Length: 605
Image 1 (cartoon, rainbow, N blue to C red):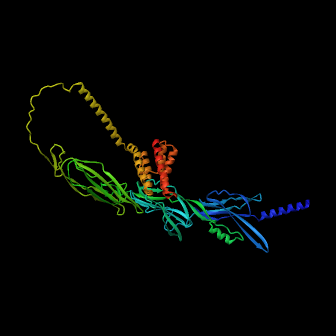
Image 2: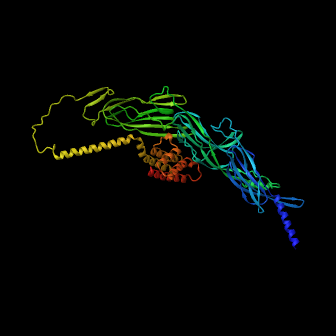
């Protein structure tokens, strides 16, 4: 019996050794990849194992994995049945930098014994397959990429104040979903406006690039208006998406083609992986406006414009108000330009103008109109001339300054009953002054004068009244000086008005929230946040960026969590329209967060 037991034990040992000899654990991957390329590394085990241990993928970025799959095959040879089980563990990696790298062995346990795979060497080379007509600085891409992001400016050189349209496009040959912006550029040195008009739905088309057909969609369009000269750099835009990638499964000996076919149909050969992308940085050359032939009336308007004026009446009585309106219409930096102030006659009371701006956003940039409406009250009668007002702009397409004039108006002001008793009227455009009723009248006799009662002058009541008047005058003078000093301190004025303006913007955003107008809602909410922090921290719009906001708020001892909330909310406004989900809920959540973060910031600032 002992001999039989020993024989069985030896037989089992032989079978065990044979089983281990039949085990194959190998690595399958490409030997050469390019920088930025995403590739697959698979570990294939022919047999049964457990406790798979992945190697350390230094110098590579793990995009997805491990993903495991199994297959089996049956062979019948001369009546002998052989069954083979194959287990595959796959990783998706991205090459980061050039060089030759060794991926260590993976391990797995087979029959209580650890089995190692072979190591493999991968060479990462520079990507030289640039798209024809492009370069690394203005939109390079390679045909080896299945999905990539590209930033496309409509011009690489512009004048100071000239608008540039920057379009971000995504190219893809595989299905993608859950597209979102993870980090927006700061656009330092530019005034910006988002003109994306897709209502959260990406419109796609097809295009050929280097012999490869791509689907392409515009994810964002930005108008940039440079605020300083020199070379300005636009940082990359970072986005993430979920890409559906087909697994390149190896076919073991005796594989079943029907199993492979149905596996493809059922989707078992596709994997969803997260893909991070960024656009290329762009250098924009900003030229100074020509100093030659620059008119004194030029105030910074750049584009193509028209200038008109209108008046509601030219005949009136003194102390009656009339309205005159000046309107600039066209394409360019319409929101930033200043409408020239007309010169009114000296005895006309002029109120501060009401400024109204209407803009249109499309793929051609910013256009619209800006008007200044003056309410004027003539205090004297006569004939007056309202001379034309000059408006000058620089036209980049013609490379010259253009000066336009408003209409000239002749005003006839008749004397009203309440003009006053001075008897003075103006005629001939203030060139001639006529005085009426200048005859000397007889002195009226008022009878005898005599002292009656006690005089107020010199009495205690008189002294009290005089002292009270002095105190009131001193108090009024102090208050006037403080108000005047306050108005002269523009930093303090902006600081005090910041919350009020932000509340008005939030009210506008809420009105768009109720009608679910996404574009106008995000624009008003973003303007509320940017405008509040610009006024509160005294940061000019041209210097306003995520970095300057964070740095300045930190220097003001604002708690770090509030600073991070503010920055996060600014980023959320940039890409909320692209994020999946219920648009109404997104808008409501961002609106509530906007109120909360401005309230917290106000308490600390």
